[in-house]
Length: 502
Ligand SMILES: [Zn+2]
Image (cartoon, rainbow, N blue to C red):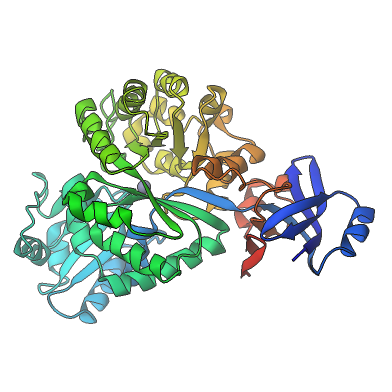
């Protein structure tokens, strides 16, 4: 059925806006630039939508999010965007514990170590001695567990190492294992995941990549929803090597008839984060003699990729934040690309502090980078840790585009909200030279993400493309930083269907 969308400004380029489009079977079949064309088109259309003078932009593709692991947030305490004192947070944790059966977990998201620097295990022990309490650091690279929680973990046979500096503090892989084992059951999880998808759609996202599925519970949750036909937008999954064993189990799961979900890649974590001082850097942190950690060597990357190939996976994504980890990722792409021809996509995730050499190596080997413009807040949160020189080198978007490396944006759910990320990229970069134009930032969050995911018919509003779009009340190109910050998605259209309206 032909449907005419009219009375709106449809983005073509910054200086070129169409006045209407025709949509058939979810795709744009014509683009109209004048009132007379619209009048003629009207006689052909079976239905029409008056978009009431709104500004219509391509909908977003979030190339790095975590529906599988972060959806549990809606069931748990989320302090990430709140400016709470520890006293206020403690009240909420105690109340939650009082409503939770003894022996179960109370999980909390959003431990900001900058605002609560003195938090220790005994603070958590004071809140409950009969619940496990686990609080995840803002970056999800570390967390704190109370004594009862540590006993729950060892009762499950998990060998979890506490940091030598602080009882109950877990970092990197030990934290991840503990956090996964505190997760809700599949049924509760799947309800939470549906809610998470709705919140993405409200923010204008019509395609998502889950960059770290690392427990079978998360995979089974995806399977339950996908087999019921309830996953609302195309979702590509990257699994971590923890899921490579038992091999029979993961092979069986990958071989199932998935619908909207596509298990396509492996996610490798090469270092940590600035907040936990685990990002691998060549010069010590400004406030500490440490230089972070590398979680993998080149040999280990190679053997993980070999196993991924064995399972039929075709993409490799590497988490790298510090310059040493970015160099290692670039080296891996340059040396391993010829050895693994079945890998069709090599990507660097975050890539916050790359050297020019790393950027050039990735360009030379046809790799891609998926960055989080909202991570520029690292520069604000951890300025004292990074030091002036490194601060200015965070997120060098312009340098990456100039080198010809495909630049793709994802939110990492910190928070999920492409408009917020674009605001960072366009208005709030650390140096003027690295800021992007609005068109460039929007492309990184739409067209480039679609292409990275292998969809050539998504991410722009022209003939032959899927009618995936969002509507805005104002021309986004005309707004000041303050006004852009207030901009909200009014409607999300996916394949010509309105899937959200304000
Ligand atoms: Zn992530």
